Every structure is written in structure tokens, then in C-alpha cells.
Length: 490
Ligand code: NAD
Image 1: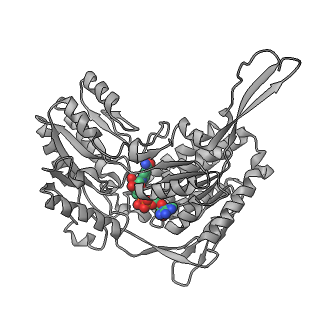
Image 2: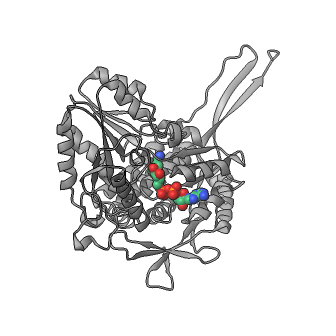
């Protein structure tokens, strides 16, 4: 699987056309362990030449009989085998994910299970992508066929590499597409493992290629003239560039971008139920979750919830991912510094830092990229900390009086990814669900890290297109209409 690089660390190579190979120009990069800043792995850095080769391999594999002529039911069986193989390697995958991203081992294990579930879910759909017949009258037979769209270029972020690899590749493969996937340079290790596992399960060479690389690698893939579709998950500025690059070649894209998701807590909510779920959504994965509920809108009179939230946040234990703490480090020093910058900005904006606010004082954690879970009050929805995605364990709590005001504040954001409502009043819950402009509304529940069966995507700047669930298949198929005249009817 690996060959020795010049240093002591084994080199993790690109997965290209069924083979593990170094980058064409020999470049590599070092992945750091975010819990202590030491080198974790040396990884081949794919360049534009490798992207060209991978796209050519995926193009050839798309029409090669062993993939193109494989019966849909057999594709489903193959995806099920991949799901089982992921489960069989759950322990090592979870350890690798935990060390690479910094996430607590328990969360990494849940991510492995989610990755297996994606393959299992889409395995079950591979042989159900049927078309329809359209009645035109005598002498005419009209039917539609859902065909695979072709070569899918997939670019994923650092925060859920296992899940994002499976989330994009499983529906694409179920539909009969081939994939070139570029992981984040900050977390490339488990996507390479998924590629290896898929190959070992019998996926033909070139059907799933994994090319770790940086922004230039991503740009080469997004703008490649010979791909047929792009699935991008990441930040808004990069998503715009990717969508523009794809559009220049008339290539459709799905862009899953950031969020600043509101959590509306009414005074009649079950606070004990809500507080753990709200904290889990906001602070899980050290707050590096696109759908994290980070803008808490709290009804006046519900201050008891705030006290409970602050106490809960203050009780969370920080530590290296492998020790399975409540919160691990952020993925990289740049991410830690960015989050710290927002907390400093919040102070300048007049926030009260009710708990957290910086790096932990424990000397054992000094070398890792940690930020304590932080609760801010005293800011309005116009403050930058309430409007911009911080992508760390930081929440802003804003007061409201009545449901109309809650809705107005919830929707006063450029984003529209997820939203959460906590109330025992069905009328209020339905009013919020109707009025919130976001792709997901959860009432008395959170769905972070799961929801494989549910369509997922954003309104407004949170993106377009849907991943997950059956809706994801729309991105990987295209409809061909066949109209046949017979007899004298046409
Ligand atoms: P990012 O936008 O910096 O990078 C995402 C990916 O794009 C990486 O693989 C990166 O190497 C690549 N990239 C960078 N420049 C590129 C370019 N010019 N062309 C093509 N690719 C390029 O995001 P990140 O910091 O890795 O991840 C955090 C962001 O991802 C947050 O905004 C978060 O909300 C978002 N995210 C969204 C979802 C979702 O489903 N909506 C899920 C997870 C993360």
C-alpha cells in the first residue's frame, strides 16, 4: 500500500487507475497530527498531470465493459461488499480518522458506520433507477431511461473525510458513474483507504480514483474539460470558484457550502433534552460541522436554558482524539487561529464570553490546536460573529420575544443550510418549519453526522443541489427520452 519516502514516514500514494502511484512530478506533503503538531503521514501531492491521467482513467473505465456492462444488481452487490469491508476495518479506519482530523474516537467510529451506511443505502438503489413510459397515443411508444451522467469530479473538505468520500462516491457508483475524488490536504488519509477497500472488493480499476492535493489540484479537476459533473463540498468562496470553473465547460455542479444555522429555543422547550443536543450540534467535531447550530436564538424567559448550556459547555473534556474526549483539537493551526480571531473579534464587538474563549490552560494540550467550547452573549444578529461561519466550537446566543421575531432573526443570514427548533408547542413548531428558509429543519431533534436517507443541501449561499437520500441520484443520472413511431400512428 505504501512505499518509503525520504523521511521515516511511509508515503501514501495516489490511487489512480487501480494502482497506488507517486505524483507525476514527485511532490509530497506532510499531514500533521492536530493533537500535538507532529508529522503523521507523508502523502503524494497530485498535480494537473495526475488529474489529467485520473480523468482519462475514469473516462475509459466509464465505457469499459466490466463496469458499463455490469448489471445494476451486481453493482449493488459490489457496493454492499464495500460497506461490509468498511465495517470489517472499522477499528483501524476510526483510529486513522481520529488522528488525521483530531476528532474523538467515538465520533470517528460513528463516521465509519455512516460511511458504511452510505454504501449500503445506495447499494439498494442501484437496480431501481428505472425510467417511465409516457402515453402519446396509438402508434407511438415513448419511454425514458435514466443513464449515468459519466465522470464525476468530487472535491471534499477536511471535516468529515470518511463520510464525505462515501456520501459522494456511493450514489455516483450506484448510478454507474466513475469518480475522481480530491480530498482535503488537511485530511486525506481515510479517503485513500476507502479507495483501496473498494478496489479490493472488486471495483474495476479507474472507477474510483483518489487524488490528495491542494487548491490547485481541485481547480484542475473542477475545470477539467473531460468531466461530466462536479460535486463540491467546502466553503462559499471556493464553491463559487468551482461552480464557475465547471460552468465554463457547461458541466453541472452540486455545491454544498457553509452555514450559520439558527437554533430557536422557546421557553416551553424541554431544556434537559435540548441542552445536550444543542451542545452536541455546536461543539461536536470541535464545531467543524457545516450544519452546526451556532446561532442560538433564545426566547426571553428561557434563561434557565442558557445556564444549563454554559454549565454543559464548561463540563466538556478536551483531549487528543484517540483518548475519546468530548472535544478534540481543531484540524490545523490555521483553523485554531481563525477561530481564536473570531473570539477576539467578539470581545471587540462587545460580547460577554460566558465560558471558554481560548486555548485550554492544561499544559498537556499546549502543542495541540485546541479551543475551549465558547458561549457568547451580548451580541446582536448584525455582529460579524453572528453572521459569519466561524467553524469552531463557538456559539452566539441572541434573545427574542415572540415567534415572528425568532423567524425574522433566523432568516436574517446569507446562509440557509440547517435549522433547529425546540418547543413543545406544535403550532409554533409548524410555523417555524414553514417560515425558515433552509434546506433542513429539525424540530426537537438534531441530525448532525447522520441522516443518510434524508436529502441534504442548502438554500441561499449554503449552495445548491442535494446530496444524501434518493435525491442525490438526480446529480449522477440524466434522462434520455426515446420516442418510437410504429405502424401508421406517428
Ligand atoms: P475549503 O473551501 O477551503 O476547501 C474545500 C476543498 O476545496 C478542499 O479539498 C480544498 O483543497 C479544495 N479547494 C481549495 N481551493 C480550490 C479551488 N480553487 N478549486 C477547487 N478546489 C479547491 O473548505 P474547508 O476549509 O476544507 O472546509 C470547511 C468548509 O466546508 C466550511 O465552510 C463548511 O461549512 C463546508 N462544509 C460544507 C458541508 C455541506 O455539506 N454543506 C459539509 C462539510 C463542510
